[in-house]
Length: 202
Ligand SMILES: Nc1nc2c(ncn2[C@@H]2O[C@H](COP(=O)(O)OP(=O)(O)OP(=O)(O)O)[C@@H](O)[C@H]2O)c(=O)[nH]1
Ligand SMILES: [Mg+2]
Image (cartoon, rainbow, N blue to C red):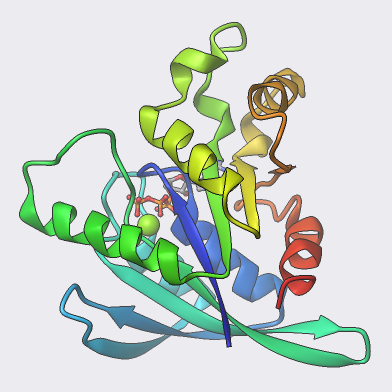
């Protein structure tokens, strides 16, 4: 089964996207495989609502290690399975908390093993005229990595908070070599496009 990893800075909406994308593809209950830094996997079942409450938070560093779901995506007349993996947020530099450092190391090694990388950015948090200042080193490094990787796409999340499209246009100008999909993990905007992108690569 192909692996699709969601990466990005903390609090950009990776976990909410994982849960809501599962819901969008028809899941009512969601089985999440939690993988700790030693590689041990524990499966837990949630309703969509309980998953949102337990796993997504307005506080950064909520996700401390990889967590994944298996999804079936309709393709032509059939369906194909894909593992969507949510990861702990990446930051510039080294974090003092060892659990967060381990989580970040786990995210980086998962990047090598993944077939598709969804690099999520919080588009709402950037100033219109200073987009470059709003992006972290981490985002530029991920975008650089994406140049060498088939199946790398930028998800500009939280579009529901935007008043106009100007930030999205600026982000696309910032990364002209990359495909940018505007999404909202909250409203489901852009999910059709993400589904199409993923389904062509599995
Ligand atoms: N308005 C809005 N809020 C969002 C959206 N996506 C996520 N959020 C909110 O942003 C906060 C962070 O969401 P998470 O999904 O926990 O973010 P994360 O990237 O998994 O964060 P870490 O696990 O800490 O790295 C939560 O309060 C979410 O409700 C979105 O599309 N629109
Ligand atoms: Mg998370």
